[in-house]
Length: 155
Length: 144
Image 1: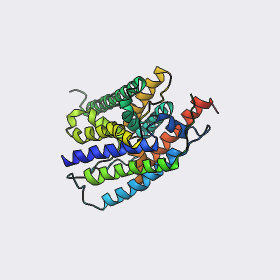
Image 2: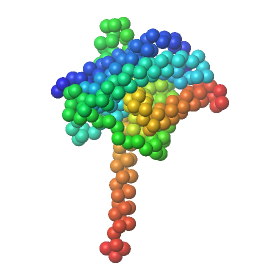
Image 3: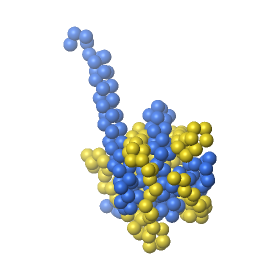
Image 4: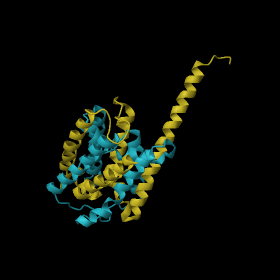
């Protein structure tokens, strides 16, 4: 229960960070990405400030056995730089460049009830579900092929 | 639809520090990575059983502007692409791409980079460069 309250507070702090930095506004993000226009370097400052604080926090967390309010830490285990990583980042980059929205700010803007924003979030969730479905499909297909290859030709 | 936004390093730094603090606290207290796309995706598959903390984080993120308004930081209507088709396509790409690549600006860009993860450094460089190219094309035409 304490962990859930802590998550709620962390979500609030994250939201305040996006709000105060202005990064909740897609126009502000696009002004950073538009290096050939009236470039606004704000996002770089926000990223560096975030990285300074989070890297100190992570270093501290690394030195502990586990978190304060939960039984164990979930550090990411994947380490390979593979095709899905790069293709996924390219697709995300295209969507980000077209809209100025990444998942955090998209969700934080929900309470504006902007019709376009609501459609964007619905499409984003559809994209996530689509990826999940597609990944399951290719995984089960690969399993069937592997089974077929292992099975003797005459049953 | 170009609008100028002012460079405000103080707000940018304070806001960034809060985002970093949120990521640090979530790991220190609950042992979780503050990656918004991953948290949201985990919420969607309700079978997982650990969606309580995810839903709580997202609730905090969504209601933050309602409390931020007190401090004078009100949410304004976001400026969205004119075309509905672009809105839908961009949304689909952000959803599909962040899941395929295993993270977004927060999970790879902040949490991953601050752990010096080569995977996250690669993803972050790729999505920043791609987005910059897309904006260069859409705002300035091919080749600027």
